[in-house]
Image 1 (tube, helix red, strand yellow):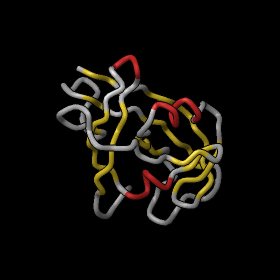
Image 2: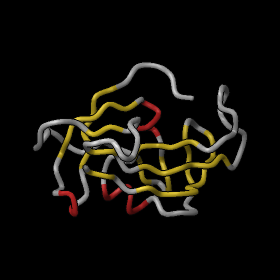
Image 3: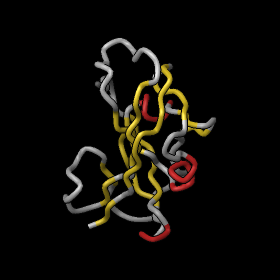
Length: 123
């Protein structure tokens, strides 16, 4: 249940998909996620390819669909969250590698665990 304005950042595709830097829009809480002391910082710009990466499109949609992790709450979720797991876009391959299944950290100040990892899709 994210809310608020989006911020412009950069997303790095995996080396298998060219290692390009693309623009993307995420909410501030996406950047505040931290797992095993590794923060979800965006890639360093400028963009090296046209277009942008998206996180809210269907996985079969054409373009670059961002990689993400599914986080489960291990303590009381923040106000406004039901307690259901949340998907968080992961902006760099290095961060995605570090955020392994079962790893723990914080999202919106609440304790979380990585339940699932989903790689990016490029179509």
